[in-house]
Image 1 (cartoon, rainbow, N blue to C red):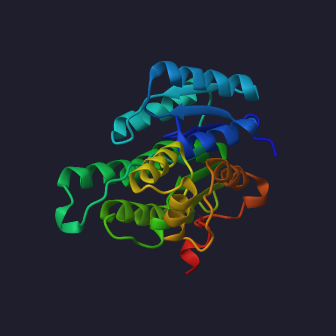
Image 2 (cartoon, one colour; image 1 turned 120 degrees about the vertical axis):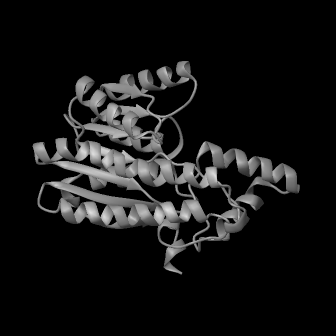
Length: 261
Protein backbone atom coordinates (compact mmCIF):
# COMPACT_ATOMS: atom_id res chain seq x y z
CA UNK A 1 0.00 0.00 0.00
CA UNK A 2 1.04 3.61 -0.40
CA UNK A 3 1.00 6.27 2.30
CA UNK A 4 2.12 8.92 -0.18
CA UNK A 5 1.06 12.35 0.97
CA UNK A 6 0.73 11.28 4.61
CA UNK A 7 2.90 12.71 7.39
CA UNK A 8 4.06 10.39 10.17
CA UNK A 9 5.57 11.48 13.48
CA UNK A 10 7.38 8.69 15.34
CA UNK A 11 8.72 9.45 18.82
CA UNK A 12 11.89 7.74 19.95
CA UNK A 13 12.76 6.94 16.35
CA UNK A 14 16.52 7.49 16.19
CA UNK A 15 17.12 3.81 17.08
CA UNK A 16 15.47 0.48 17.89
CA UNK A 17 11.75 -0.12 17.46
CA UNK A 18 11.00 3.49 16.58
CA UNK A 19 13.57 3.53 13.80
CA UNK A 20 12.17 0.26 12.42
CA UNK A 21 8.71 1.81 12.32
CA UNK A 22 9.95 5.05 10.76
CA UNK A 23 11.77 3.14 8.01
CA UNK A 24 8.69 1.01 7.29
CA UNK A 25 6.43 4.05 7.03
CA UNK A 26 8.99 5.79 4.79
CA UNK A 27 9.13 2.69 2.58
CA UNK A 28 5.34 3.06 2.24
CA UNK A 29 6.02 6.63 1.01
CA UNK A 30 4.99 8.59 4.10
CA UNK A 31 6.96 11.72 4.99
CA UNK A 32 8.58 11.29 8.40
CA UNK A 33 9.31 13.42 11.45
CA UNK A 34 11.98 11.69 13.49
CA UNK A 35 12.43 12.29 17.21
CA UNK A 36 14.90 11.09 19.79
CA UNK A 37 18.23 11.66 21.46
CA UNK A 38 21.71 10.93 20.12
CA UNK A 39 24.71 12.38 18.36
CA UNK A 40 23.62 15.26 16.11
CA UNK A 41 25.84 14.15 13.23
CA UNK A 42 24.58 10.57 13.37
CA UNK A 43 20.97 11.72 13.50
CA UNK A 44 21.47 13.97 10.47
CA UNK A 45 23.09 11.09 8.57
CA UNK A 46 20.14 8.88 9.48
CA UNK A 47 17.64 11.54 8.41
CA UNK A 48 19.39 12.02 5.08
CA UNK A 49 19.68 8.27 4.48
CA UNK A 50 15.96 7.63 5.01
CA UNK A 51 15.06 10.57 2.75
CA UNK A 52 17.41 9.44 -0.03
CA UNK A 53 16.53 5.75 0.21
CA UNK A 54 12.77 6.22 0.02
CA UNK A 55 12.41 9.54 -1.77
CA UNK A 56 10.38 11.12 1.02
CA UNK A 57 10.72 14.24 3.14
CA UNK A 58 12.27 13.56 6.54
CA UNK A 59 12.54 16.03 9.40
CA UNK A 60 13.86 15.80 12.93
CA UNK A 61 12.78 17.33 16.22
CA UNK A 62 14.62 16.76 19.48
CA UNK A 63 11.63 17.14 21.80
CA UNK A 64 12.04 15.66 25.28
CA UNK A 65 8.97 13.44 25.64
CA UNK A 66 8.86 14.12 29.38
CA UNK A 67 8.09 17.79 28.60
CA UNK A 68 4.48 18.47 27.42
CA UNK A 69 5.32 21.86 25.90
CA UNK A 70 8.09 20.33 23.80
CA UNK A 71 5.72 17.63 22.52
CA UNK A 72 3.18 20.26 21.42
CA UNK A 73 5.98 22.25 19.76
CA UNK A 74 7.14 19.13 17.90
CA UNK A 75 3.66 18.44 16.52
CA UNK A 76 3.38 22.09 15.46
CA UNK A 77 6.83 21.99 13.85
CA UNK A 78 5.93 18.83 11.93
CA UNK A 79 2.80 20.53 10.61
CA UNK A 80 4.81 23.60 9.60
CA UNK A 81 7.66 21.74 7.83
CA UNK A 82 5.95 18.62 6.47
CA UNK A 83 2.20 19.13 6.84
CA UNK A 84 -0.37 18.24 9.50
CA UNK A 85 0.39 14.96 11.25
CA UNK A 86 -1.69 12.09 9.82
CA UNK A 87 0.06 9.25 11.66
CA UNK A 88 1.31 9.50 15.23
CA UNK A 89 3.39 6.67 16.67
CA UNK A 90 4.01 7.12 20.38
CA UNK A 91 7.05 4.91 20.81
CA UNK A 92 9.50 6.69 23.12
CA UNK A 93 10.08 4.82 26.35
CA UNK A 94 12.54 4.05 29.12
CA UNK A 95 12.97 1.23 31.63
CA UNK A 96 14.16 0.91 35.21
CA UNK A 97 14.03 -2.18 37.41
CA UNK A 98 13.72 -2.47 41.18
CA UNK A 99 11.30 -3.89 43.72
CA UNK A 100 8.34 -1.74 44.71
CA UNK A 101 9.75 -0.85 48.13
CA UNK A 102 13.15 0.04 46.67
CA UNK A 103 11.97 1.85 43.54
CA UNK A 104 13.42 5.41 43.56
CA UNK A 105 10.75 8.13 43.49
CA UNK A 106 12.55 10.09 40.78
CA UNK A 107 12.79 7.00 38.55
CA UNK A 108 9.06 6.35 38.99
CA UNK A 109 8.29 9.93 37.96
CA UNK A 110 10.60 9.70 34.94
CA UNK A 111 9.16 6.41 33.63
CA UNK A 112 5.59 7.62 34.07
CA UNK A 113 6.36 10.98 32.45
CA UNK A 114 7.84 9.45 29.30
CA UNK A 115 6.06 6.10 28.94
CA UNK A 116 2.57 7.21 29.98
CA UNK A 117 2.10 10.99 30.12
CA UNK A 118 4.11 11.46 26.92
CA UNK A 119 1.57 9.32 25.07
CA UNK A 120 -1.30 11.43 26.41
CA UNK A 121 0.33 14.72 25.44
CA UNK A 122 1.22 13.41 21.98
CA UNK A 123 -2.36 12.36 21.29
CA UNK A 124 -3.75 15.60 22.71
CA UNK A 125 -1.54 17.64 20.39
CA UNK A 126 -2.17 15.58 17.24
CA UNK A 127 -5.88 14.75 17.47
CA UNK A 128 -7.32 18.17 16.50
CA UNK A 129 -5.46 18.15 13.16
CA UNK A 130 -6.51 14.57 12.43
CA UNK A 131 -10.17 15.34 13.19
CA UNK A 132 -10.02 18.40 10.94
CA UNK A 133 -8.81 16.22 8.04
CA UNK A 134 -11.22 13.37 8.81
CA UNK A 135 -8.38 10.82 8.79
CA UNK A 136 -5.73 9.76 11.24
CA UNK A 137 -3.87 6.83 12.71
CA UNK A 138 -2.57 6.81 16.26
CA UNK A 139 -0.37 3.84 17.16
CA UNK A 140 0.79 3.59 20.75
CA UNK A 141 3.69 1.23 21.39
CA UNK A 142 2.74 -0.56 24.59
CA UNK A 143 4.24 -3.94 25.48
CA UNK A 144 3.38 -7.43 26.57
CA UNK A 145 3.76 -5.68 29.93
CA UNK A 146 0.69 -3.65 29.03
CA UNK A 147 -1.28 -6.89 29.39
CA UNK A 148 0.63 -8.93 31.98
CA UNK A 149 3.19 -8.20 34.68
CA UNK A 150 6.72 -9.15 35.66
CA UNK A 151 8.49 -8.47 38.96
CA UNK A 152 10.88 -5.53 39.37
CA UNK A 153 9.10 -3.44 36.72
CA UNK A 154 6.39 -1.61 38.64
CA UNK A 155 6.66 1.73 36.81
CA UNK A 156 7.01 0.21 33.34
CA UNK A 157 4.11 -2.22 33.84
CA UNK A 158 1.89 0.49 35.33
CA UNK A 159 2.70 2.85 32.45
CA UNK A 160 2.14 0.28 29.72
CA UNK A 161 -1.15 -0.90 31.26
CA UNK A 162 -2.13 2.77 31.29
CA UNK A 163 -1.21 3.14 27.62
CA UNK A 164 -3.54 0.26 26.71
CA UNK A 165 -6.37 1.86 28.71
CA UNK A 166 -5.70 5.29 27.23
CA UNK A 167 -5.74 3.79 23.75
CA UNK A 168 -9.24 2.38 24.36
CA UNK A 169 -10.58 5.71 25.64
CA UNK A 170 -9.24 7.67 22.67
CA UNK A 171 -10.53 5.04 20.24
CA UNK A 172 -14.05 5.30 21.65
CA UNK A 173 -13.99 9.10 21.55
CA UNK A 174 -12.75 9.14 17.94
CA UNK A 175 -14.77 6.18 16.66
CA UNK A 176 -16.67 8.14 14.01
CA UNK A 177 -14.05 10.75 13.18
CA UNK A 178 -11.96 8.78 10.68
CA UNK A 179 -9.23 8.39 13.30
CA UNK A 180 -8.26 4.98 14.70
CA UNK A 181 -6.24 4.41 17.85
CA UNK A 182 -4.49 1.11 18.56
CA UNK A 183 -1.69 -0.26 20.71
CA UNK A 184 1.06 -2.61 19.58
CA UNK A 185 2.24 -4.90 22.38
CA UNK A 186 5.65 -6.43 21.57
CA UNK A 187 7.36 -9.19 23.50
CA UNK A 188 11.12 -9.59 23.19
CA UNK A 189 12.43 -7.37 20.39
CA UNK A 190 15.93 -7.66 18.95
CA UNK A 191 17.12 -4.05 19.11
CA UNK A 192 20.78 -2.96 19.10
CA UNK A 193 20.49 -2.37 22.87
CA UNK A 194 19.25 -5.91 23.48
CA UNK A 195 21.94 -7.33 21.18
CA UNK A 196 24.60 -5.60 23.27
CA UNK A 197 23.05 -6.93 26.48
CA UNK A 198 23.08 -10.45 25.06
CA UNK A 199 26.75 -10.23 24.08
CA UNK A 200 27.63 -8.82 27.51
CA UNK A 201 25.66 -11.57 29.26
CA UNK A 202 27.31 -14.27 27.16
CA UNK A 203 30.75 -12.99 28.08
CA UNK A 204 29.86 -12.61 31.74
CA UNK A 205 28.34 -16.11 32.07
CA UNK A 206 30.78 -17.91 29.78
CA UNK A 207 28.00 -19.09 27.48
CA UNK A 208 27.47 -18.88 23.74
CA UNK A 209 25.34 -16.12 22.29
CA UNK A 210 22.84 -18.76 21.18
CA UNK A 211 22.54 -20.12 24.73
CA UNK A 212 21.90 -16.79 26.40
CA UNK A 213 19.48 -15.77 23.64
CA UNK A 214 17.48 -18.98 24.11
CA UNK A 215 17.47 -18.64 27.89
CA UNK A 216 16.32 -15.02 27.80
CA UNK A 217 13.50 -15.44 25.29
CA UNK A 218 12.30 -18.77 26.69
CA UNK A 219 11.74 -17.19 30.11
CA UNK A 220 8.60 -15.54 28.73
CA UNK A 221 7.79 -16.73 25.21
CA UNK A 222 6.66 -20.17 24.01
CA UNK A 223 8.10 -19.20 20.61
CA UNK A 224 11.82 -18.89 21.22
CA UNK A 225 12.29 -16.18 18.63
CA UNK A 226 12.81 -12.44 18.81
CA UNK A 227 10.49 -10.03 17.04
CA UNK A 228 12.39 -7.53 14.89
CA UNK A 229 11.84 -3.76 14.67
CA UNK A 230 11.08 -4.32 10.97
CA UNK A 231 8.22 -6.69 11.82
CA UNK A 232 6.74 -4.13 14.20
CA UNK A 233 7.11 -1.58 11.42
CA UNK A 234 5.17 -3.88 9.12
CA UNK A 235 2.34 -4.12 11.65
CA UNK A 236 2.28 -0.33 11.98
CA UNK A 237 2.00 0.07 8.20
CA UNK A 238 -0.90 -2.42 8.17
CA UNK A 239 -2.70 -0.41 10.85
CA UNK A 240 -2.48 2.61 8.55
CA UNK A 241 -4.07 0.73 5.66
CA UNK A 242 -7.70 0.64 4.53
CA UNK A 243 -7.81 -3.02 5.58
CA UNK A 244 -7.44 -1.85 9.18
CA UNK A 245 -10.01 0.96 8.98
CA UNK A 246 -12.29 -0.65 11.58
CA UNK A 247 -9.57 -1.90 13.89
CA UNK A 248 -9.57 0.54 16.79
CA UNK A 249 -9.14 0.42 20.56
CA UNK A 250 -7.22 -2.82 20.20
CA UNK A 251 -4.01 -4.03 21.84
CA UNK A 252 -2.26 -6.13 19.18
CA UNK A 253 0.20 -8.65 20.59
CA UNK A 254 3.34 -9.43 18.62
CA UNK A 255 5.01 -11.47 21.31
CA UNK A 256 5.75 -15.07 20.32
CA UNK A 257 2.83 -16.31 22.42
CA UNK A 258 3.94 -14.56 25.66
CA UNK A 259 0.44 -13.39 26.62
CA UNK A 260 -1.33 -16.50 25.29
CA UNK A 261 -0.16 -18.49 28.31
